[in-house]
Length: 380
Image 1: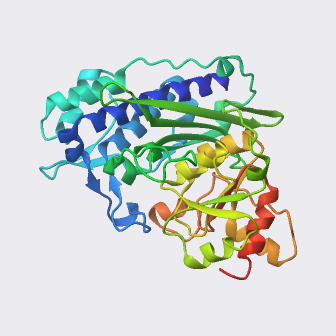
Image 2 (image 1 turned 90 degrees about the vertical axis):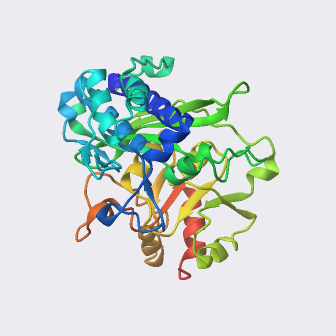
Image 3 (image 1 turned 135 degrees about the vertical axis):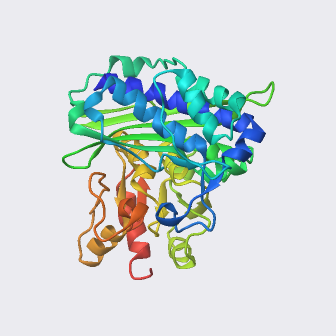
């Protein structure tokens, strides 16, 4: 299973490179953006976009993983449909071919015959990239790939990726919006229970390279299975003891007023806002905030699986907000109701089958759940 982690780290870095290549070619990028419609549309946003980068990354990961672990065929799930429509109205099913020139020819159909752009993208897809991580190399883990499934979010925070705002990091340590909010997320879960056991988070646009217009990325991974809890990110204790007594709550700017008002009543609390579900959970992972709360069902399994596994490796988790509220009202404190990833929602259609419908709470310290739930109970 450690071999799977090492592979996922490499394919996530390849994915990040594809995302950067697409951003660097402005005319190409304009060509790639298409609007999601029908059953694939996320209801939260008036405009939600699908990019060719999304589809290419998803199919590249599926291709590379299944090539090394054929037992995962049929168990790698993603946000995106791999059907793309070009400017001529032709529907093209995007796949990664065995040879680079064949992938170039297929992508050229999507790009209205632009072989130069297709070749650039194909080269990034077929590069032999190996990301070395000493801790991952030495990891011992006894899970069979035949017992797991994978959720991919090829570019979480698509709207931020498209808008491309190059925000500077504020004093709080995170960016409320912009390219740093766009992430590549690959999460592994147990097929039998849905428990997240491995997660890779790659941030393609972590910081700008001083010379030129390029970006440098970063990656964080975590494994939580049985007695094994390992994370590449080391938690730092607050240098200011008084600051550690404050409760920082991260929200979406579109969060309901009733939720904001209720959470504002928490002692020594501060409400903060950022874009991208995956990025907000990453902020919790890094200890930049204490908790991320979302009351709506606008996140999905592909958003949360990877960072959930990383949080579990650090002793935290992601819980179903509505289940926690229900347990609290029934007198059951300390009920975590963690999300699972193996079963779709009954009586739902399209992407809604995989929605985290009850809202979520992402945390490093489970004692925070009771505080948040107590503040919200009976008010939302």
